Length: 408
Image 1 (tube, rainbow, N blue to C red):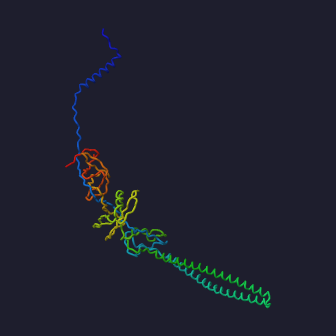
Image 2: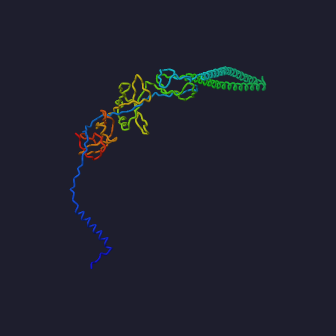
């Protein structure tokens, strides 16, 4: 009799059979010959470097400004009578720019004149009184001297028994009264002198108020000692103004300058250079102008500190208005060990690629400005040397270590 396989062993036998078939299939798999993978090289353009001393150029946008820009404010309270000039108008020296109503000012002037007359009259009266007091003081001194002589004579007679004691007492009493009278008169004279000083002070005050009223009459007419242009007119005829209210904004049109913000990278270079050698080119009204750097100053640009450069604007047939934006090309001092490269060679703001052993090597470079040719930049880096080859064209997959091939 044939023996039957126990049912519990059937799953195990099936698993072993499957493993045997899988091992047979793996063993009978045809072997493929491996094909070596070759790295392709990207064709690029390169340039061999020659380092030297080069002057960077910056393209700046400067604003027309003026150091003489001034706010003309009202010095008195009055109504605006007329505004002969409007915003943008030019004016000559001592030309009437704006006029205030002077009727109230004229009344104030008359009042100040009357106050001065009154103060002078009071002073004159007091001066005459002081003169009389001085004369009376002299008389009191004479009477005192007489009383002293009378007492001396009475005492002499009394010693000879020719005058009684009562007469001596009367003489002494008379002398004492004269002394009191002289003291009172002296006090009156001193008080009168103090009053004269007080009244003189009132006269001086009244004269000062009158002078101020005369100045207010002059201030009602706005004039300037130089020619210029009205930048803004801020009031109109009939408007009531108070002291301190700005009436108009003016500037001397012959003292214009250009204000430019310098990038932080060039600020230290410019500060360390001879400012007399720094110039900027400008094209305006169909003519090219060469501007000299006048001064440097600190400023705030986008919340950060920056360097402000001021250039004197030359005399022009037609002066540009304040706030106009003009383009400048600034030539900076030379940078040692620098090189000019096409703009396509700069990746980001501070990275270029050297080509070393047919592979790209990223290095950090400092951008100083534009080069002497359009579309070229001036850069420098401690990692650049004469004879180095750098990538001068731009492509999307440029990366450190990428294999490249120089294009003929």
